[in-house]
Length: 294
Image 1 (cartoon, one colour):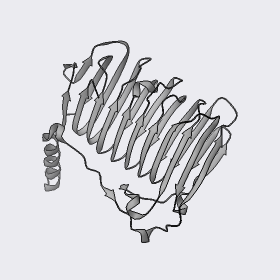
Image 2 (cartoon, helix red, strand yellow; image 1 turned 90 degrees about the vertical axis):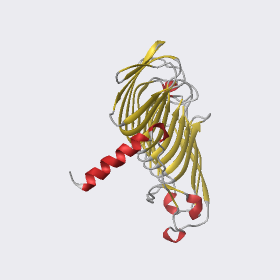
Image 3 (tube, helix red, strand yellow; image 1 turned 45 degrees about the vertical axis):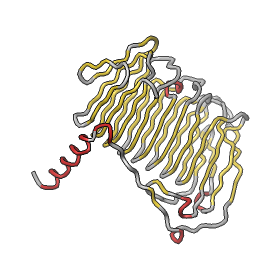
Image 4 (spheres, helix red, strand yellow; image 1 turned 120 degrees about the vertical axis):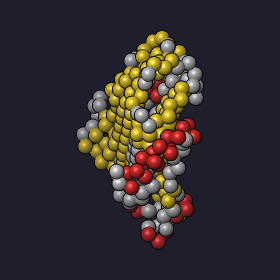
């Protein structure tokens, strides 16, 4: 075995030995102003009517900055504001039949940028309509705050790079969700109230980072979750009283079960009534913590 593979193995074993103390620190990046053409701040009003028909597909493409989503109270598909001082961040709307795209520019910033440190501003505050929709969010390096409770999401797909995101379903999704898919890079992500999303299948894939999946809420039907993660810290919360089974595939992951979990080999079972939540976890290394309370 060469020296380099040996060093990699030693590094992985060192990470695992830290058990639940592992914490993946993600870099912030200050972008020098001289590398980006910064102008006066512009604030645009966004107002997108819902297309005709029973099915709407909304794709939000966001580069870098801060993106906030929450339920609206009007008949519009999307309304809100976009404030930015880089021309490449100017929002563009495209409508093709029942598909609507709201996208920002293609300025590439890697890492989780401290935009304020570079005097860069790109902030979107958006309200989403109550009509049934398939929602897709494609983002780069950004900070996101998503309140999706009370919406009617047929599906939810999120794909981002290095991100810092809090997504919550504080109230039930008003229609059955066929799938919830979240793919992220090296990030800090917290997903809360996931039982309220009313999905049948959920897939969460990530690189190195810190992740919290909280399945609080009202589980209305049997649901299956797949979690695939690299060297990371993952916390899974399932409220006591919810019937759940967690199966873990990883020989290099430290696992701690807090609460009333019953362990049998690589499976952890939570006794409960009603629909059953089945979670399959595959991790490269790091720590996995199972909880019954937040």
